[in-house]
Image (cartoon, rainbow, N blue to C red; front, side):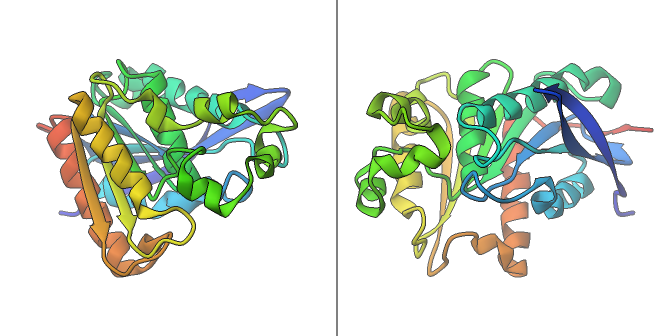
Length: 257
């Protein structure tokens, strides 16, 4: 029998009198593992509905997912985006007992800008995040590829007038790699013109060199947001599920209400 997945909108917090909402995807039979889903869109567009397909796919495999939202660049400057995602993750962690989840079996996953945020959550909560998944993420805002596409002053839309290499380095997940970084899955198309696939390759290499656990999937001929194609979205969901099964120690299921 296929695991049924219910969806409800929950309030995870508030900031500056603005509510932060998220969509909670709950399977009828849970494996006790939770995943925070973080949407992408260059920090300027997108919403929490974007990753609903993954919420349903993971739910059918027994995972409880929380698809969060965060303030976009047009509303608030950095680090508001990261702060909001951390609020959502801390909400999920605080609700583990109520949701029938194990506190040690929480992961975070994101696409594009959301992948960057997911990796930063893993860096800031390494003891609480058991695994991280990032689809075609920007990982280094000072890389040669990034600099070839824009002047760092172009980042004013996100960080304001105080654009410095120090600030951009602090936004770059690759600078937080160490041996205690959570197990990480990276997925990228090698025809991505927005974020070069070597960003994920570099992140993978540094994780392995640091002694962390990592897995890298490079898809031939695919562009940015390749998983919008149904076949590759389904394939990616399978890869993510297998990775989480391995690193979250998914064993046994419990009924949820």
